[in-house]
Amino acid sequence: MKHYTNIALALLLSFSAFAQKHSHQDLSTYAHPIMQKQAVQWNASFTIQNDALTELRTHIFSRQPEIVGSTLHFDATVAGQTGTYFRFGQFIEGQRVYGAEIVAHVNHQNRVGLITSNTYPVQMAQGDPLVEPGTPLNSSSFLTADVRPVWFYTGSALVPVIRQVNNDGIDFEEYFVNAGGDVIWERDLLLYEDTIINVKVFNPDPLTSVQSIYANPYRDENDQNAGDLDPLRVDRTVTAQFNNGTFSLENSYVRIRDFDSPTFAPVTRTDNNFFYSRVDNEFEQVNVFYHLSFYQDYMQSLGFNLVNYKIDADANAWSGADQSSFSRGTNPPSLRFGEGGVDDGEDADVIIHEYGHAISASAAPGTNTGTERGCLDEAIGDYLAASYSRNISSYGYDRVFTWDGHNEFWGGRFASNVQNKNYQNLSFFGIYTHTDIWVSALMEGWGKVGPVVMDKVVLEGAYSFSSNMTMPQAAMAIIAADSNLYGGQHVQPIWEAFYNHGILPSNPISVDELDSERVMFYNTAAFSRGQSLQVRLNGENAYRYQLVDMTGRIISSGSIDRGTEVWNYSGSGIRTGAYFLLLTDERGNTHRQKLIRIR
View 1 (cartoon, rainbow, N blue to C red):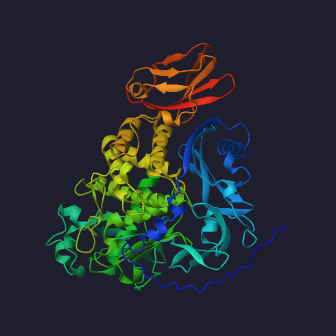
View 2 (view 1 turned 90 degrees about the vertical axis):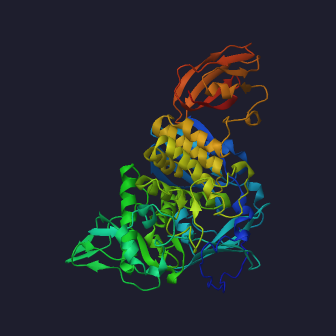
View 3 (view 1 turned 135 degrees about the vertical axis):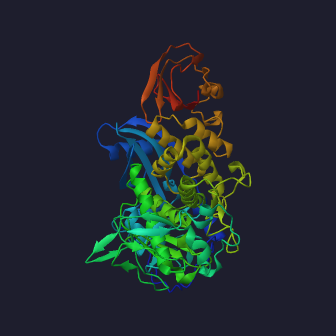
């Protein structure tokens, strides 16, 4: 019978930390080994025959034998446009391994494609659970569970700890307590950012409308220069609620509420004209409501049903601080927009960025663990904000938080690589530091393939996101999304954008990644430009070959006779896109090579 260590679960912790702009960039949090770990990724390329869960588990265990002995608990399925994303959590001795999960894409033809795995070898688990683990929870329930025992990664081992959550509707924090009652790690689970029916709104912000930088007369002035800024409002319409003769800011997507100080009741009217000056608190409520509603409509038009709940938003929040946040700890999840500096609810960049956290949490729930993964989450929000603004006007779109930042209050961020960063030279010890390189790569792709294509592949790619994912792995998820959505016709410009920032290599694979020293692939770069691929084989074997696209569809196949030591493959007639060449010898060993064709 299992014996569990008894520890005191009641922690007398002080939850008095007050959020300030970027105050949560704590190096002890983001530099911790559990945040620095990197996931692994591969293309499975097999077809589900009967039971998806069983066959996925079997494949994963065969690919990662070091996790045999653990249990892969099915967590959820999320439906994307190109198929279903199966999510599993890793458990050892019935106890969740914190932050460990696997996501696998299965297309509409039951072909398994990209798999991203963030797991730990079973032998790393040392000790016994501190309390009885109980019934496994899915990731959404686990996120808000008050107290649960977990295995926690220290950098060299998995140790038994207790995870405790403080979730009072305002604060949302998790603490990890060892057998001695010491807090060994803690994390704020709010996703912060300086931010951010006939209506008048800023679209996307006053500076973009007048094509000016932050300067006189277009300054905040503590809301006192309405005479200069009110004329920059535009007339728009948005669906709202009408009940018992009263219009209110609520629809199927969003509900304006007051759940944080300062206390300003949500505006209602008996007529349908919500026209307010920026000096009025009602203006931020209307502005937030409009942009959230508009973006959800846009996302629905692209075919995505993300954030499929009515999100609560307080447009006058954070006790007036210059801060905004998304919380997964409320039911439903919620947004808060502060009023320090420029009111965050006046800038569409802030509003869409925060909504980006909700989108990411909807596509890949419970996966925002890892410093680089956290940076990706911030960068996704920045990209969606920059794309949204650029769709309205190209002026200043690369200054993310155009109105809220880039002023005396804070410096804002960029959607362009103004510092000429190269991913290969970066270290991630904070989630805000290197957002610009990811956003810049995506916006470069935006300029080449257009907003609709780029937005769709970014949103579809988000379903594959996992804990401890790196930017190259996220880039491959976006490449896979283009192959799944568009047959890979945009791989060349998107891959080039990532390559230009050092995120993806010019050659999709190096000889260091080959499965066997006896099978070697040459001339892959020339193959991408239409020339033949050269493969050196073990002449003692005969081989079968298959060329498959990123959806797992077989493009061509054939045999190679025994005695062949050099085989040339032209790939004639294949379209632009990303592919895998699979060579299987007589003993059943399969050798893989990733390829791209750009002309």
